Image 1 (cartoon, rainbow, N blue to C red):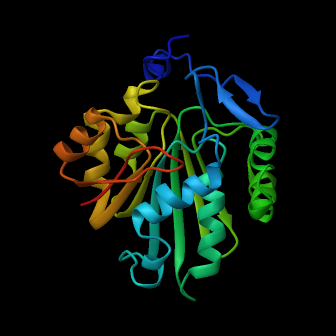
Image 2 (cartoon, helix red, strand yellow):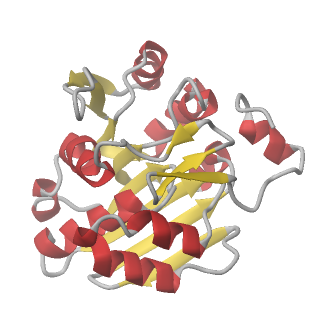
Length: 246
């Protein structure tokens, strides 16, 4: 199977039910399809806080901002193990306003199985409650659009399939984006000009993004789509990450 163009395989009718995984260090999943780990090997949960939450000005914005429909909407490229969702959900329950609602929508080509999600998230006791709730609610065979109502006025939607089609079909008005596909060198389609343009069009005015990626072509694609882009220090010794705003 080619690592270069997984979405082409889907359009050819060859979509896998899930990725083929190796497990490193006991419970760290590694995708054979993309030749990459699902998160930073130093500490994926803390990376989420540094790159995706802080990169989007969260949790401070949750007390100040919401979309016209009453939700704070986060979009994510690459649901993976659900780590970013679980850490975001944990913090949301601590910091949200009393009437606020979170809608977290992720776009995932190869949804993982329940037991894989449970195993991968078990390394972080800080999100144990969220891990158990997600694993309990996760369907046996995730396909199409998985829509789960979770505690703490939180809704999780996972759109299973190619990201460009999922984002293009989504309702506009996202307040923040977590751009967390596999490394651009491993999965360039997740960082394409077409997908970055679709993200921009679905972003609410003043909406933001954060990503660990700092490759030149990623930055240029985001800027060409219309985002302002800022370089910041990356996580765990990584020189740079990107964040920005519509």
